[in-house]
Image (cartoon, rainbow, N blue to C red; front, side, top):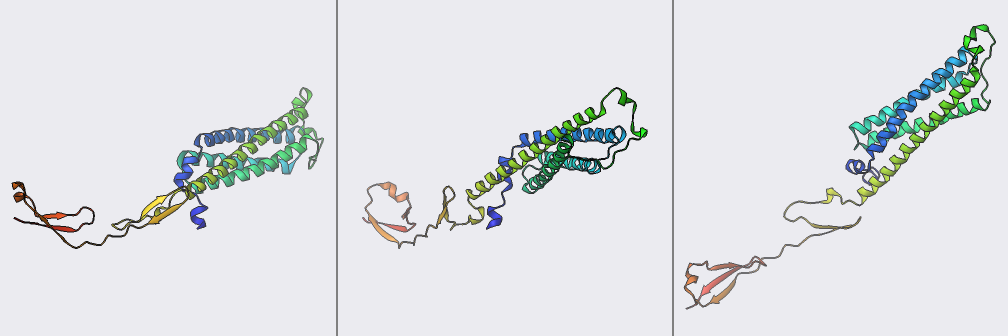
Length: 252
């Protein structure tokens, strides 16, 4: 029972699936994922080379998040372009978006903690090997914070887009399941001379079988010929209502 009512049909799923909106989400996630990895690479480079600050957990989680983001938008493109009617593929993409939502929230937490000064570095050194020529002209700390804020904004957009896809999946899933429940079951339809007549309403299906009418005995009708045209006509008449044979006997 649950297999038929809880898992939507592919045709119903394709009917309600908003392919254009999902494709826009995939394009948005594509640009955001590359923007996030570019900003994170700049954060790691400036942190290690100019600031001599090692935020190991933050640096590592940023690239892990980028890998999850890449998997997410690639999966969405595959479903949008190749297999819109597959509920299983859409469910897999929904799972990847849930993971992207979680990792985006983690990256937002790291960025927010650094901006608010709540993320202590693993080690800080004052070695001259970490100081570049830009230190005399540019405040590297200010650039570092701005890049972090940019990554924070990208992570928020990624989180919202993943949440939007999850909401679309839930909406389409519910509509497709309800549509299947209101559609008559094709397995109950019979074929043949004694097929039942089905009258389906909105979510209600009733069946009744038309009983076979018994054959009526032959009846004899006596007619008087008033016209010569009766000589060329058949002497038998079949009742159209009951299928009984009527024998015609002419009397003179």
